[in-house]
Length: 258
Image (cartoon, rainbow, N blue to C red):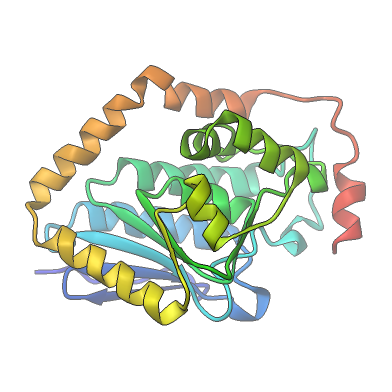
């Protein structure tokens, strides 16, 4: 019997439909800007779904006009960023969420529309698939705010689109839309409308559901092992721990956007 999925915050919605768990960021008035409670909820519920034999996949999406605009800068108002790091208030739950997605026995699918920036893109890049619409905007704006990634962007973006293209997007903060994101390899597919996006995701989930759950889990584990040559866990830890003490303009840059 499928378990009950109850988020610990109203900033995240959970819905079970047959054998699929859909998690929806629920801050539409704030473009689903990420809050630590949302990240903790994703970590908890993805881990729960992974252990639930009645669930074959998790879909991660956003309510309203966007997947997520990234970290909520208002939450950072009382935090003094240290050398480009936003700090443990976000980093700890984000680390748990990204780890839960990577280690889940079932596929986690990012269904992205509207906007997907920086922290939201970091989270989505840990998902097994990413699907989007042609109009959706993607970007890595860490450098614009005097920040450096701590959730895996330096590893996952380069793995997705190649090192040179990853450097270009991160160094420039350039925004790309869904069609270009597909050409770059940032997403699996881009379609014209949100309705088509929903149908595409539903179709992929049906295909997964028709296969052996244990077989899919084995394949995901094998793909994880294929990344061991990149020492992904060690690299992510290094990204988080390395200090860049010459990043001193973070607070000033964040203040310009608050």
